Image (cartoon, rainbow, N blue to C red):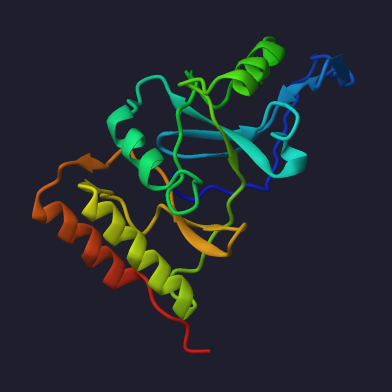
Length: 213
């Protein structure tokens, strides 16, 4: 997803509409769910980033957000299965299996927050992931370690027969390790030809630079 501003929060209430109710907490065993409207933090060509639903340990206060794809945006589960295998901790490649929506303009309410959180806590559901908030990265001012790390990430993709196809726009900063992380896979290919791999390589060489400072 391109040009996402994660921390900008825009809320708009039209004339005559009622103010949202105060947040209510619901306790059930170890899970605490908050009933509230979710705020769109940013949107791009494939979907949007929204405040995470408030599952314990997966809340916006803990640095998590939820991502939603548009209904007409396909998900390549084969590619995500490979990414899960080669990067289980989600450090180099940001995966998503996501709920779909019609529009980022609509306000998203999770009436089944508790059910969703319960399922996530018990089984790895195939259509939901809470992802860490990511920061923007200046592609022209990488440290040497960041440059080498990103280059190796691209090599790992190619070694596992995946091309990304949309660099440099989809590289962000993983604040957990201060290293680049590759996001968004709508243009990715499984078993790409050499031309597809070269597109990734040329994008890397052209757009990513080590800071001279």
